[in-house]
Length: 261
Ligand code: UDP
Image 1 (cartoon, rainbow, N blue to C red):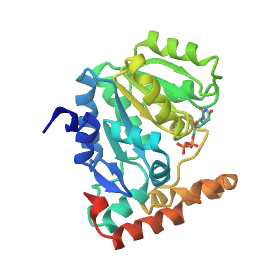
Image 2: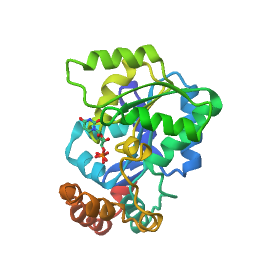
Image 3: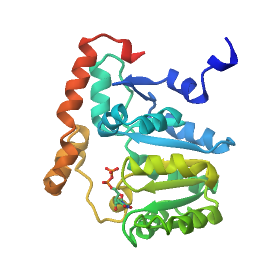
């Protein structure tokens, strides 16, 4: 094989992934995800971890830069229950749901154990600080390298970047909402030289106690979207992707297994 046609690192990673609507998801359990992250922390390259859900998969299908970020990510875990459903329906089951907020909590435990610094970027003023305090309460000894709210202007961005650079965290959790947080990490992580970057959506709000998580029985049945819709009906647009997602998965099933690879 000539050098020009040799797959890029991103393509190699894609090979082990289960493809749902053309988007690769790593078939990992929570424990496997953690040990993969532990390995990446020891590596030299800044790596992004994506906590994927069906909405993001639908977006990646029509947004090339976002699809590229998925391909280049070191690890893509199935956060949304819809991905677990789709993988089972398509006959290539993902082992379990790896919820972003639980992964963040487990990463904080890992960081506390191995003395890694964690930086929290995102959410409204004061929320990241409260989330950091909660993580420290849960994981004594956790080093919080820093935190910053997520409502900075383009002009202020340089200061935010400098602050992260100076803090030299090992893990940067970014809660700016998707797809912004993933695109932001893809753009800045190399210059920040942070080994692990992970988009965590609204996790800081939950950790800070500002937003309630769905009850366990709803989580287990894949009904978190319904819980959020009932609590925040003005976010109804956020569930409009569900019927097209289900329709596209049905089509993938009917039109053969090529997209599964
Ligand atoms: N957010 C932010 N800056 C912005 C817009 C949003 O920091 O300019 C935060 C917001 O406060 C919330 C998170 O990003 O904490 C988005 O949460 P959401 O639950 O909507 O996450 P998503 O489902 O979009 O990943």
